Length: 229
Length: 272
Image 1 (cartoon, rainbow over the protein chains, first blue to last red):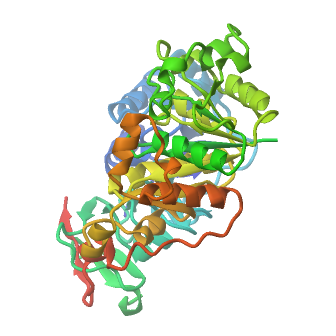
Image 2 (cartoon, helix red, strand yellow):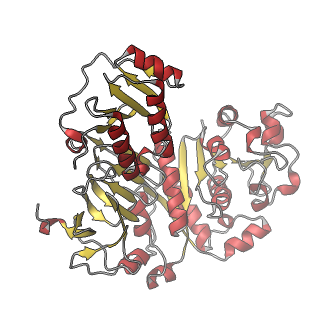
Image 3 (cartoon, rainbow over the protein chains, first blue to last red):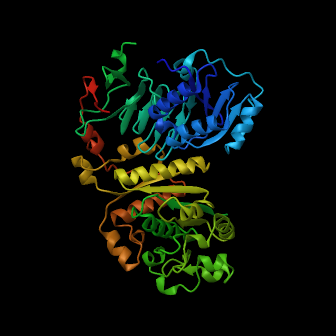
């Protein structure tokens, strides 16, 4: 994917959206709009921080980005800018602005796709009805994912147990994302922009571990031992 | 010092009140001193099921608000001398009490009883929180229906995140004949999803309806199937090893719905 000017990452405080300072603001804003549309469900209810790096921003620039975000129903928690004048402009636009944390900002040369694949979390319990986990990277559940529970991940989802709930892998548009489970019987399965549900008439219960992936524009489930990696 | 046990379910109508009344009765028959507490403020039922409605003068909310002493509100059962009921208020709502009040109340009860059984209201809101706050143990009750199991799962998740001791499960209203035909979830189907310790299985029994309407808990008559099941649960609560009667020998509902073969890769129907 050619998405390089917008990097979306999960942090321990929520989600961070970083804009590449080398790309004109208009292009970055357009790409942001596209990325948000792809991954709307992921941002729902998340705490979002916008990082513009060293870019100089005026009050109207901030308002423009705010407009992009609010059209996707995202409320900014705060913004990060290196330039003091940009921070002041942000405050004038009614935003909470902060300088970048002391730690060096991560290199942005690798692009969004690679970035998504560098992190993951391990959930070491059964996710019961009502539980929801969201992460920009991969998610591994060591336990079951019960009906009524939900996992939304930017990368792959692996359930070492029974998967009976709802899973969305590659929620930011990654067509390569897969979902694996020892017992794959989801209520609903979403991969990138595709939604699938098991047939209404059962075609038999899974006999062993399976993997779901996108093949020729459709979600396909295959037994794990026959999957060609 | 008493064991405080809360009986809860998430879903309504699965048998919390019936189970509370019957377990209280069965434990008291075994010589334990038992208080059953109706935490379903505003929709009280436990007094009716136990046939004690006409003896209520004070209730739980009166105790919490200091209108009376705890002893004045406790109603002695008409059959078993070791069984007491603390009724809910009918004219108030769940917000009349908070979890701290319930903990304080149960600490008072602990001094005089071996078991305090709390009948939780349905739902996961204030009333449920009140009922669960003082519990040492929680019994989750479900029927073998997908919706009841879903709600039980939600409750178990909430209990886990509240770091309560792992709850135990009672499956109520199981119909062995329907399980045999594969028309009802069997015990294994339920346990596969909920994955907690099984405390008891209560078969469907018409005598429950009769006993509830008469205000005589079915556990008083150990000859009925449901009464026997509640007696067994009471024995397990007291630490006895009681084998589970074999109710299931069919494939169960889920097994039948899924069929048996899944030999080829399945193309999920994709919608965009």
